Image 1 (cartoon, rainbow, N blue to C red):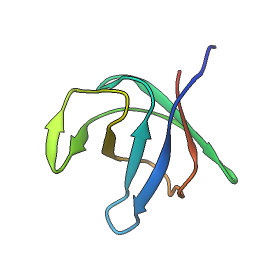
Image 2: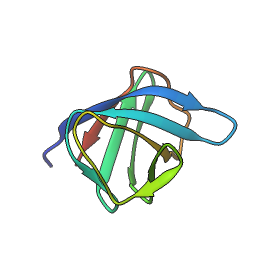
Image 3: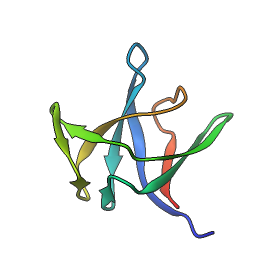
Length: 82
């Protein structure tokens, strides 16, 4: 299984379970990601993403996207595409 670091968590909205991820690679809805940091290590499929509350199917390098995540995460956690 090949993993590629594609970004980092820069913020987490605990009340709605949404992480803001700063990307350094392209990410699309349907991609499978892995989030690691602290004692957190989980995989999930990207169901949806938003930028400024606007949904999008594909995000580019340099963008910050919000997405629902299955576990609590913290700033600095690494995001991999798998």
